[in-house]
Image 1 (cartoon, protein in one colour):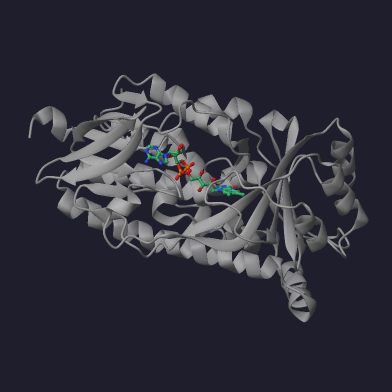
Image 2 (image 1 turned 90 degrees about the horizontal axis):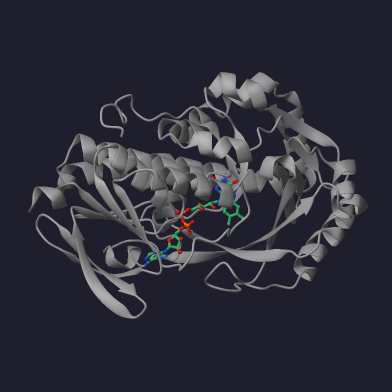
Length: 410
Ligand SMILES: Cc1cc2nc3c(=O)[nH]c(=O)nc-3n(C[C@H](O)[C@H](O)[C@H](O)COP(=O)(O)OP(=O)(O)OC[C@H]3O[C@@H](n4cnc5c(N)ncnc54)[C@H](O)[C@@H]3O)c2cc1C
């Protein structure tokens, strides 16, 4: 293998996972070529909460300065009863989060995060990006990989030291890894829209929620999360209900009655918010069992390709960022992929499984009914703000090993 190839990485997908991986590998001195199937990197998606475990990595990778001008630091996360609108509890964020977890808790538009990652990748000579190029095949050799790239119907072969599959929940690279899990529909739909504070829906929202915080309205058949994005000019609304499988991509269409019927018995003000908020887009939620294989010889899956999860712990993008940065660390610190990839996979699976369990617990608690809901409310009332924050230390206080990105930043 030529020395050039031994320090080169191919990445499938220019989403959060792929761009973070590209920056992290380039900071370790690798040359990186990203292939993205979309012809253009569009402003797709909606809001994202980025907890300190993710923002500390973005800071290490030099991404935060490009992101902060578009991000909001929410004051708190408030849990409210969707019927009475009463606050059940609040976890302090803002300065308190930054002091406790040593990095900011942010809410952003996904497009702003992708633009910030792209800007940093663009400034790095070691990173190249080809759009309208889909990875469709793979050949593994003793010391290198060869991937097939389909661009406008013409297929070419590219080679490198390893391939990173960052190609999302419907990953093609995952199909090239033996014993990898498949994606499955979770039976849940996410309903998303954004509103401006100076529109009529924004005024309805101002009467029932805080425009400087993350607010979760809880109910047995649905929950709705609201938080500011785009420097605070807009509020991102995302509601979750049960639903039918509507598509194997993000562009499904579902009847809004599924959402409005799930909201029966909630506060009329909340129903008014949903009815006045304009067009809602339904996203079918798919997951990938994190216990399938993520690595095979010279291939590693990161982000949703490895372990798409329901968003009830708000950690999918954060886990993608952690995966990518740690993978680059492992590969840089021990070039023998046969050793570094299994070690990385084992460490990441332990963490991701814990996060998936936390998301399932949140879902159970947020959709509790009757006596279980009363018990939940009592427990939340009895826990001090300090205890609530301490419960999250394992999640938000996670850090990359000290050795990260030390010597060879450009
Ligand atoms: C409703 C909802 C709310 C969420 N809220 C949060 C939140 O608050 N906080 C949080 O951390 N996470 C959240 N998430 C999760 C988060 O959005 C995802 O986990 C994250 O975006 C995954 O990033 P990714 O890069 O792995 O995949 P993607 O963003 O899907 O990127 C994959 C990329 O690969 C490209 N691609 C696909 N196949 C190929 C191929 N064969 N060759 C080349 N390119 C290819 C695609 O075009 C795409 O650009 C939420 C998700 C949902 C659905």
